[in-house]
Length: 160
Image (cartoon, rainbow, N blue to C red; front, side, top):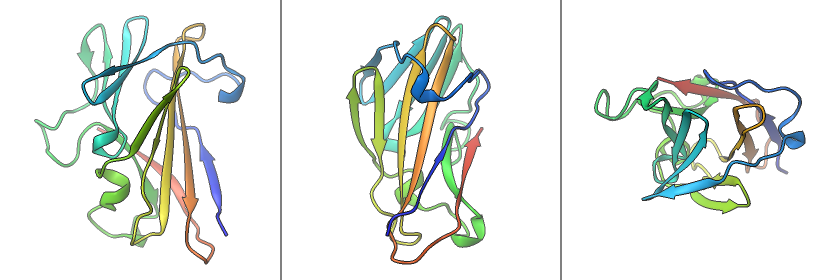
């Protein structure tokens, strides 16, 4: 039996008013190489499904607010980890943290889905979009338990 939890984390420039389902997701998702970009005014969010669906940059007027892989080749950008860490120790589960996700753009939304992690039995789904009227990005996460037993887990947004 699957247990799902939906989490709406807030990042530096996010301002959410109401639920994401009520927002008009009207900013197109553009592909740039293997990465995907959503631009709202002077702010640009870039995500890479090949690196665990990680947010690789969050730029305002061209200045990136996140650290890059040049600072630390393992811990950089912004991504989702399962909590508590005691369930997986260190390093974070590669399937969820840095292995490729399947990515699909549908309308003005980017969907990225991980495989089932063999250690935790979890799968992550990420949906990113933008709302030009509110000037925000909408990040939606679903954690699915693909084990036969119930688990206690929460979302942990790691932003550097």
